[in-house]
Image (cartoon, rainbow, N blue to C red; front, side, top):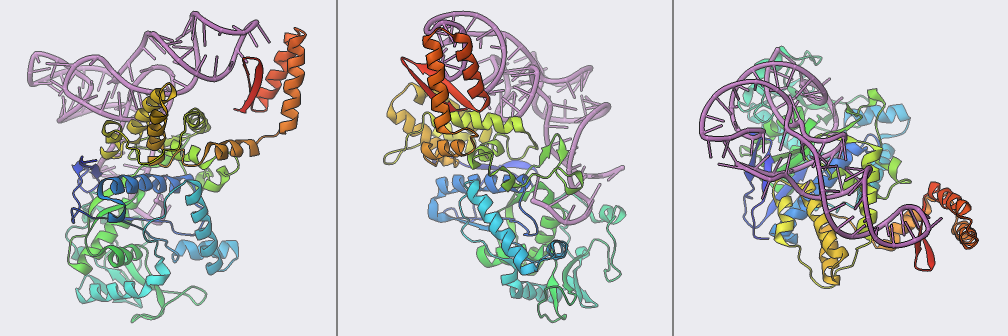
Length: 452
RNA sequence: GGUAACGUGGCGGAAUGGUUACGCAGAGGAUUGCAAAUCCUUGUAUCCCGGUUCGAUUCCGGGCGUUACCUCCA
């Protein structure tokens, strides 16, 4: 579609027209998981949001013109700690969690990014970057640690609207004696014997958090690129520190657009381990088709906080049930009308787009095959209705507690009761089946059933 | 304390300087043994107080409220 894309840039906080550096190519980096524990639905949100942004960008610039990099951070203090707690090796932990992350991505029907680099495979780049920062006097070494000197970067705090003096005043973080200033952050630190380590000019050790994203975005996208994304909580300190490192090391501007998704809350409370209200993605595997979660996750605009609930999932499931009735696999190339697509171009307004899909559904439900194909294409575009109806049904069948034979027997019993005008018994049977998730429909002379 | 975001009907959730999408739930009707499903019709909302304006829910200021970030976090 020959319309402009608009995005809300966290740097400045305004909705802006999106102009890539190269008018024909887009480069996007999104912060991926630190693989220390199974991904939860909070992690699912950026996965789906940026997957849709990826699709929208490809729609405008062409499939091969968009590079999407999403890292896997497989070395970090949290990982070391988690491995200790679980009493397994770091290697096994990171492999397991990475695996589990990929399963979740498949479940949520997210496309693979163009590149998915791992931190541990790029340590040398980080060492290189630290060397440059030291040379440029943006960093200093002390007792085998290397720190970034925040006072050396005048734009520090611009993304998160903070000024350094306030950070000093409000610093609650335990300040290492090695640091010149409390707000400085670590680029390299020594490892204990039982912790993973790499050789470096400052001794055996490991990189500080934040550095992997600066190093890997440079490797795959260059010093300056178009979009950098992630959850809101990453704005400070993670992204602020990335900006500092990258700009000082490369002496160029870093990402032009910063896109951040809002949080998921449970009963209006933040999901946190301390609250005990963390829902892992895989906890939903058995009960819900991944499409249901996907639709639920985009039913709110990406910037907004969203409250997670069973009701939300029930509604999403119901909607998909309805939509699947009109699914028709497009034959040949089918275009989504510009008017219907436009909300996605306007700061990724997924609820607005969903609203348009509802309208396309209404049209399709009483319209031609072509209308059904347009409707289905519109759903497919955001990763919905991509699997055949039979698969959707099958999933529902698998979670049933009643066998098909039993259902058919009950229907037979009920129809006998109906023939005998024993409607009370007939209703009882119907309600019994309904309790088990089976919906009966009497159409013409035949009784059919489907899963609620 | 600092920095932000948000406050739209019963619920979820868009948009907008002048008729406030869409979905769910509700109501009425068609249909039905009664239902369900489906179809048709339909009611209901912009936190409060000022300002700008012919006109504000939208812009500005103040208040109240909710939430997040400032420490690991998506």
